[in-house]
Amino acid sequence: MPQRGGVVISAMAAVEKSRNRYPGEAKGFVEEMRFVAMRMHTREQAKEGEKEVKEPEERTVTKWEPSIDGYLRFLVDSKLVYDTLEGIIEKAAFPNYVEFKNTGLERSENLSKDLVWFTEQGNVIPEPSYPGCNYAEYLKELSEKDPQAFVCHFYNIYFAHSAGGRMIGKKVAEKILNNRELEFYKWDGELSLLLQNVRDKLNKVTESWTREEKNHCLEETEKSFKYSGEILRQILS
Image (cartoon, rainbow, N blue to C red):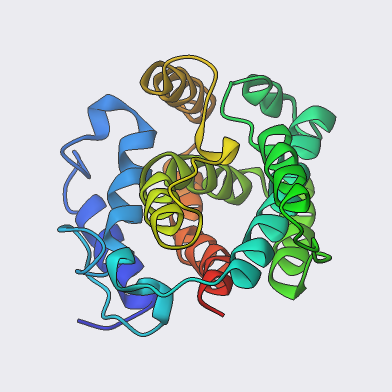
């Protein structure tokens, strides 16, 4: 199977296979986004994954060898991305973005608390690095001119963190933080309910999209994984 773009094309082909383009389409567009996102994982990361392992962060997290310095770079860049996302939603260049305000999935404030804790342990907090700055700038540009593509990133960033991100946080904590659970991996309220609420909002926003707009959103999945992967890779640097 062709790699990179081929993974998205393969998933899209399955979505377009028939009038009922994907068996979960009746559940709403979020299920289509999930379907394409899962195919972008490697076989080591998820049983539905189709990509071959090419980068260190694409291996199963149990094989990672994280460092404190790398993890701090990851957290700082992640905070910049979440700051940017939350600012975009607050500004709401497109009216539909208002639907995603105060969902309970926001991470910026929690990350701030974690960085304070690291400082108290004697660590020097670095400035945001290229991967985080690059992604933040891309999100700003996208949010103002391409809402369909932006929604793809919004979905993948928040939902990936609530699933694989939590597992990564647990394993990293076991290896270098004496099992400390960071605030980054805590939510106020039942996470499953918060996620379902956002699924409902995403499905509502995308109901009026044409098939072409939905496909355009799905096609952005590869870029979402690329940018997020560059930030994640820093844990291992």
